[in-house]
Image 1 (cartoon, rainbow, N blue to C red):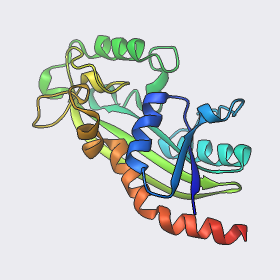
Image 2 (cartoon, rainbow, N blue to C red):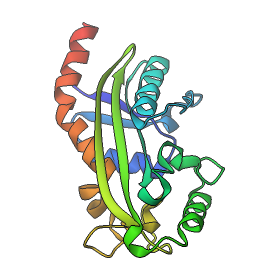
Image 3 (cartoon, rainbow, N blue to C red):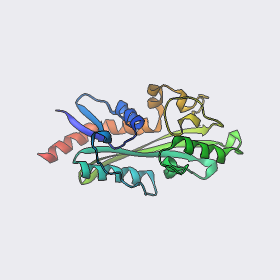
Image 4 (tube, helix red, strand yellow):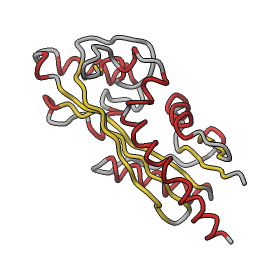
Length: 206
């Protein structure tokens, strides 16, 4: 039996990354590109958990499918935890990686190397129409570079230095990044729980 799960994003790079992590025999993974007119849930929650759960539940209700959605971002200690839930629109335009990164580096330009600690945080939610089934998270500690390095990944990857590696996330191959990333951690936890929730969903539909 094939089970369809919709990855609740229009971001093709993110959708591809999540699909690589969740890929399992018998699982049909789609993104919102397969659903023209799908709603864009408003991400106005105060936490990553609120935003991820809202997206998953609203999309599951609208599409009539099981949905996974995430919210993630960068927390910089020298900036009091910013950009946090504002990470995707920090530069003033939602999803503009260049503007976001440029603003971050401007704000960090006078921060010494030893004080540039930061972390990526991701929360993933799984929902079926009417309710949330699971919420999991992942965290990757690191620091902020003084300039972008690498051409892989997306978002803040080019300025996020991995501990002990001296590399940014954008200097890793996709498979390497998925092994350690905050999103990889969260979605592997979700993947481990999927069989139970898929079985439950099928039982409820009978």
